[in-house]
Image (cartoon, rainbow, N blue to C red; front, side, top):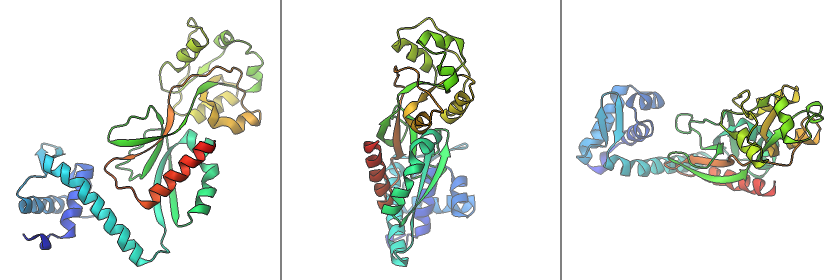
Length: 290
């Protein structure tokens, strides 16, 4: 098969299969049958006279040749799409899909989005709030903003801001908190991450206090419980500055502990678009000013 006769459909089938490592998932994305995708990939392999995938029972993985070809095809298809959209009309908006951990979305990002839209009216941002476990590939996310140490498999990450943790509670509870030991008289609310309270007590020089407590799947729920007087939450207090200023939450102690930071992440294999660059640069600027 001459190179000039290779259809775009063969490359699209290979690209989708390489991203999903599944002919079945690729077929759903492309709205064709699984057999059609497998046939198109096989046709490309026949032309190259090299296998692009290792096929085993219920599993699919890229060969060395497939791994070298995949990012080139992905980048080329993306660039073709960008040019076609430009030709169709520059008035069309670029769409950016961003997954955001809920604490950062409500505590920082959403109130600032108007400034991004004012600066980049041609970019439509679709925000998907999550509990810090986004699936960038299968959820088709351009970016994910998440909390952690900055190391995630097959993802690049850029530090946005640190997120030190400190106890927060309502005013009534705060009246009874004069020293760290007083926390032993209250329920200690925490996230699923282990040892956060123990590490905070270590900073205070206290290692004999039971640091176990009720576990929540997101910081906003912890804050709501603390506001209701159900205990004291160990929280990234800079994400709750509005509640602290309004007196809804009190920060009774100055001590804090660093358990992670907020990062902007994206898949290494995903080509970076102009819209992604614009959003990244704007967001980093906003975080620098915070």
